[in-house]
Image (cartoon, rainbow, N blue to C red):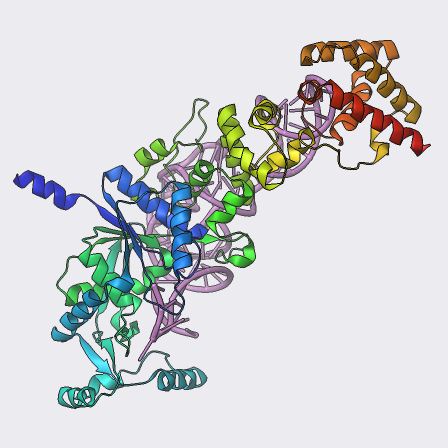
Length: 491
RNA sequence: GGCGCUAUCGUCUAGGGGUUAGGACGUGAGAUUCUCAAUCUUAAAACACGGGUUCGAUUCCCGUUAGCGCUACCA
């Protein structure tokens, strides 16, 4: 029994705590992923908490967007979502506890006053930190003013000297001089808690053991450590994760293009591929070799879970590389069973307004699966299978490299006549057309090009004979005939 | 500006006091081929700089530089 409780006390509890002021972005998704991997690896609990105490900027729509992103990535959580906007009582009580411990004081300075002073300090080149003036107001006076209805924020009284430090699981010991830490606001004058208070109150209340979050929070951490102490609470393990950068090495943001996770779904990224790629941004299992003795990059979710530990997290920021993501995606696409791939690309055809039946698409899928890096690209790669009328193309494309229009015409006419009786099986077609090449005295390259362009409407296309077999006699003959016409009109 | 963090090929990274500094993406060349892909082979490509410590530093320490982060009654 005792053993069991001890064991339970050690079961990790982690959280992903996004602020619904935007969609789930790449950085947030990676943080969520790491928390998820850690929880699953340790058999711990993942809590989802929505940090919506900034009423101005938070919205339900954004919450839904974040949940959608989590679901798409397959990151399931065990508790929540909890909304901070519904837990205001806890924060108020926590603030009172800190006040009672003598580590906080009311501040009567208005936002405007503070801003003015900050501007002036900036001009004079002085420290921008709050000057702590309200800290010196005698308690009786402060109480009198509050009783009189004067608006007051609650600030934490940071020790004047000494330092505050913590041991980060990624960065090691990090220390800040207390003199550098501002008397930060816990409760705004309207009674709404700030981030500083609500994170700590919740992290304690939710009995979190590990805080895995972006490295942009390192500077906030001493403020939180101070509160843990004031509240007599045990410190969790902090693990700060390096940031994800854009190609220009500044923090990834909208001007780098897609940062919303759902935009990657739109682009036709496979969630498993995205997860694999993201997991290796800022984390490494440490030189796991594949069968050829090379470092592995492709890991299933199960392997990722098994391999994930905090000490594999790197300290330096990582640039988001779209090309590498595309490679991962192509790998996953190729590994997908045809039936599944076929189902996955169907929506993109529907969206494009192409009438792609499931059976035909299933037949087409193997022809394009090695030619696409995203699911969406399937449409561009295979649209000619599903259109009535081929998109206009340059008739000059029908003419082989070292040939002329007359040759192209001869090839097309011969092919069309042959197709009238030929069995529409790709092997039979191939044999017949190869023989035709011999008859016409042309090499296979120049022989097949006019046919390919006539049938597919472009120079680069999936394998010709398989494509023709799917298209069928009627369509092929008609398209070749059309090609002949456009060729003769060319002169 | 102040404080904090970081620094291996263009990018993601492995490695670690003595190595030909390894892999992956991307790039170049070649092979294959009905085009394009895929695949295979191959090439170029890195320890930021300066001091220490040491017989020996890319690795450990200190500086410099650069980059990033924080610097709100945002989160």
